[in-house]
Length: 524
Image (cartoon, rainbow, N blue to C red):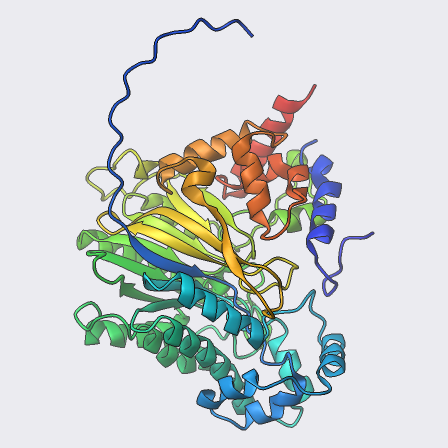
């Protein structure tokens, strides 16, 4: 068995085999006297919470029945659900296999049947949600290849229209399942008018066309929460660089979400002409810092949402057999550490960061590190809890492309503090949407015995993971079972010490220091 090539399959077994292969390279009682029980202090009352729905990595695949694509291309977005929901074509299996061969993808993305099943489960389980976050990758993998293979005579305008209809189908489905509430959407690396990881550096045509759909997704926001000036700013900012700022809905008073298109900050980013360009990343970081400064001046709390998380890409680091303890540099998700640095420097007002991309269920902490500030110098006082860092939730995917079960996350939010108090992951019984049932996989508070998803709670949990290199503790076992939805083999345990270091060490240097210190500690 070999690690995959650039275009080869990447299953969980493949990925973790590679991680296992590289793990060695990455890291070169007295008796108790009974005492009378102390009186217990009364438990604090749980905060009053509101519900929210977290989604990521839908990767809707309108090409899953290739015979329908010509009709889709000639139809409006309003007609798409009827076409996609029609019985499969007689030649669907062989047509799909041929398309998969022409445009290799490591697995099967979300067919419309699975998306319908997801929407039904969302309607049944998330009816109390007061808003939705969708942290990127709406489009299927190899989207451009599939379109050009099936419609070789189509124009670029046809392609852009097909892309927009796909995104519109996702938004309209969510709107029908959860009417009247705002949907905050970030773009991912597959969300492009050219190809994966590519966008033009300024005023990309795809972003300009998508901006009205993103604004329409916010239509559930009350006019008093989203002024006309804010609506105009959403359109202008999104068209310019895929980012925007919007208030979270009442009762989350004085809380704003900053949405990034951090494809521009990826190590893989290129223009649609295939050329590197650092300008859009710099512009987006400047926008983020300006928005955080303005939010502080308005005494607002902030959530930040993007697609690609900051920090170490452990899979790529291991696949390249990088020896970080001998000076090798770990592979990073982003091309700089600026987002993490900015968030850590504003940990007093940033209450939550939401990302996707890995398709796995993860928790992380963007913690202040040696040599960088733990809070903005302009802040008058820093509560001890937020000074620990910014809690980051990586939301698992709807797509089963890696062999994982589809999931979505139901969140409980304290609107008075903009704090993520608790969440429950809802998981599908299969990967297809056919005869699929959805049920709770786990709830954070009961699985980890933590009252909130806060910096203090994550500091304790991650410290426990790092002090448990064999992953034998109960909390470590819960994490291993939950990381890859539907998998019970706990293969992540084979590289657990390195993974645990990545959870709160988002810079290359601090990650290497953690891994090498863990290696010395565990050495016989």
